[in-house]
Image (tube, rainbow, N blue to C red):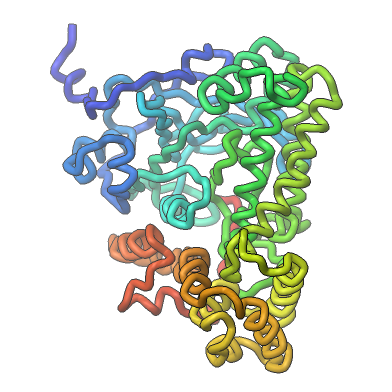
Amino acid sequence: MTTTTDRQRDLDLGLIWLNTFAGLGEDFYTPVAPQQLPEPYWIGRSPSVARALGLGDAWLGSDELLEALIGNRSIAGTLPLASVYSGHQFGQWAGQLGDGRALLLGDTADGHEVQLKGAGRTPYSRMGDGRAVLRSSIREFLCSEAMHGLGIASSRALCVVGSDAPVYRETTETAAVVTRVAPSFIRFGHFEHFSYSDQHAQLKALANHVIERHYPKCQGSDGVAGNRYAALLQAVCLRTARTVAQWQAVGFCHGVMNTDNMSILGLTIDYGPFQFLDAFDPAHVCNHSDHQGRYAFNRQPAVAYWNLSCLAQALLPLIGEQQSAIAALDTFRSAFPAALQTLLQAKLGIPEQSGVDPALVQALVDDVLGLLAQERVDYTIFWRRLSHSDGGRDRAAVRDLFLDRAGIDSWLQRYADGLAKLPAAQVSELMLRTNPKFVLRNHLGEQAIRAARNKNFSQVDTLLMLLESPHDEHPGFDAYADFPPDWASGIEISCSS
């Protein structure tokens, strides 16, 4: 018999929930209900994600949905669970991990998995409390949508909601929950878990689940040596190469590329100590906890390959033949540099089929990155000013970024000469939709967080608006595209959240 309380607790959003991950069986997860938080409030909301989920506009402001997404009310049709996985962290095998503070509500009929991050303790929380704090939740909400705005494969965020309930980290902070959305939250670590524990039946079930739902082309006999699991590895290598190339091109540091933070779909997930570069330093380490610099900006491609090697090892019981795994893995070695070269060429305004000498393009890329690194020039501002330089002919704003005027003048002349035969309008158009004006710099996120601590969420709303369309000019908001203030260099971002 359904009571009045039951009806109040079950919120019907009008979505059809399939719960396909739950269908894999309880070897893969533990059912866990969200833990309640008092007096919730909205912090940030993404109407575009709501529309993608099929939620009407009225929901994204309702008290009913607010209560559900903070964990105080169940959503009809969902089966909340925490999944188990393992992984390598900072290059060392960490053993069993799992969703320590994320709960999968389920997946909708149109292919969206929905998670609550910060909804309380799970069996995989280890010594943690399962909570997330305001600062990290705002950063994840904004960066998820910023990456989507940049066209980079990423999980997305429907909203972030808060409570003044205390959460204890280095200091006492307040709680928040991010509602995350992705086609799948399955990680390399899921495969490592079942492979390392010799649960090969479960490993096969997981691989088949991923292939059938997300890589259907791997089901045929045209994969690597006709092997669907080698074909899966190859497809993951290709997607990962594309995503990491986009990170490098836009100047994004992930900060903690453990195998349990690597998406099987090549998505950017688990936004913790990330950073968009200010001054261009190829060896920049954005994670204050990364004392060895394992996840430095210029090491990200090599780490991605290392992580893919771990995935290959995990899949080897299914692939069977080592050479097939090696052949699939080698896909990354060719796909990544090709993808990065295409993206950097576009940043210069040179289309793929431009007729410009590839050797000249490579030299222009190498030389300008050297100049940027030599003087620690602001990465985003340089590329945006170059986009407005009429193919290197209008040089003043670009030259002002450099002390070595002779060096940049020489490069700009070679650049202008190399693009002389390309239509100026075409060059400019490509550059302006490739080189963003706005990125989520650390100081912008910090300003939004400081205001939010005083219940002022206007900066969150403004940043979301700008980051959803980061290539647009947005007149009146130039301050958000300006150089970082001096105090920004003192911001320390760690794994603590």
